[in-house]
Length: 301
Image (tube, rainbow, N blue to C red):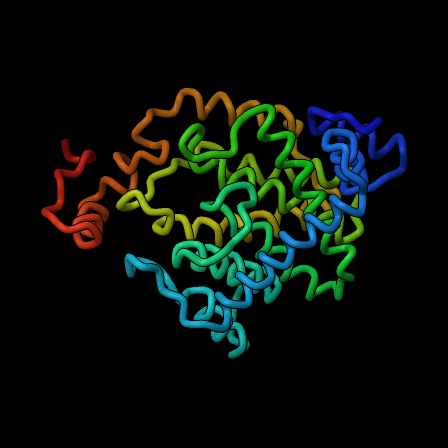
């Protein structure tokens, strides 16, 4: 049996059975779906292929969204990395570039894999394809990365929320950062307990993040939030691998995120009525995309 509902239960099963988080997630999928391991693995491999193609498109093609608000950032950052004159670590910047690339493909109506949502689709693949390159990881380990991240997404979705419309951007990019952080730890050879610490560290840094898409489009500020979400996941994983712990357990951080989301005003839950969407420039961009005159900024009402 591999039935878990919380991060604590997930880690307990993994430790008691001396398994990886990805193993526990696979076993639970078999139990819930009734499918074989081969069938589930094949399904995840298809998702992996979609993610890989989106990343490659974003870092090599001149991607532009239909609105014109976003595009080209992932490719531009790759060119910056190639110059070698960067301040942050190369692997982190590569993950940031690939995270933005995926979201830019999404904004351009290309094919992506929601992880856990379309608006936060860049963080898991961005970190996966950067870390895999750094570690020279096998295809099997990369697929396992997705199962490990899925285990955390499963817990968050069933105990809180993963949509900006229900919990703000903390629920989207926050969940994705937590998912990626746990999986980075596993693929790097860390323990399940260290993965749980990475979840707590990553998500606590995203608490309270509002969902305020300019013009109601999942582009601004979403592409750059995926970039920073990827960097948070990378740093959180490194901290956990260094045996740095967080005072609040992962499940309680998830519960805090849920309670914060419940008390968040509707203007900050993907309605495009508050936050950056309500700034004068946000309204001007909305009018530019959809026509008409900028409406009065809520922040000045």
